[in-house]
Length: 427
Image (cartoon, rainbow, N blue to C red; front, top):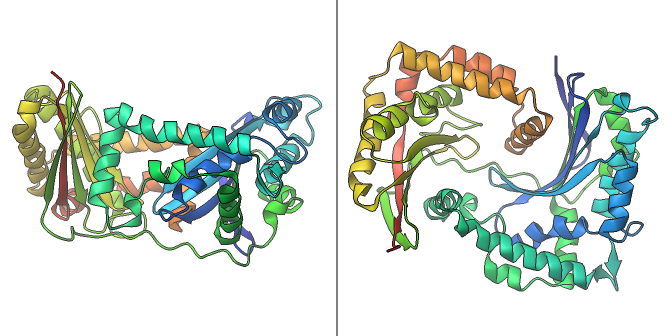
């Protein structure tokens, strides 16, 4: 049985602790939460990668690697994520549970100390970050920005988000822009680091067998638990129940052999923080969230209008996306059939088997989360950023009570905001 606790350790510092004897490793996270967008976007996306290159005591990757080897091969990775309309930057670590390795007493404390050192005591030269480290990670960031377009299945949902939410923080790129990244240097990055330390809320996380009080004590012995009096409050993610205007349609040509069609919807206010998210999850799942959904069985299998078709409820933002791969000449008919299946849900054309199947799919997916500490880390960071504390077990219980009327209401509250087509231009 997992016991989840959340505690404010100091001003601007919170710890979420998942205590469970189930795993033989512990997962630990330190994340600065900052608003998405703004002039520091690329700098913040570059920051944890440069911090990961060295500390004052461990000035290069070789020294850090040796320290991790001494911690029974613990792993630490830089983290840059979107969480609602917050940007999470920091580090994620996993290590062997010290009870599973002879002589490993103090292992968790050692990992936490190293995480604190990476964040608060970086390797610097002449009052700024190391020029070589900064230049290398700037190029890596530029490569990550460019690589987003290399995979159309990744790029098209991102592009739809940029267009659909262009006037909202959610539409801002997580890694910043190419133009911002090209201007990064060691002095600008160090100044952005200092601003981030001043302004960010710090989210700490632990999943493993140690009791919450013991974990709190370990963090309290490091700078990670020090107060952050200048930290900015987390602004709630803006959820627009309806589109600001009429549905828009955008077509862009790219040299790809298979066109990609994405539709973006507003959910009527259903989100992590409002509306009826349980009903919306069930609706989204039977509409397009499984291999027994309406989109899969009708649009893909029966009518062969697309290579794939699936719906995703982005609960932190209160939007739904349908993503599909099609032939160029199938654009209009595929779009119309996707919308026709939505109309079927609105009209109550939903079987008991579809409802039961959606409930089972959701229960299976959330249940699997309980077996993976890394997935739990991601889940609870999203909950923290949204200001909610609803467990996966509670989600499973909630969807079991969703009836047909609530599903139909969720479908009827759904409004099309944008249609985006990446049209294949390859010969």
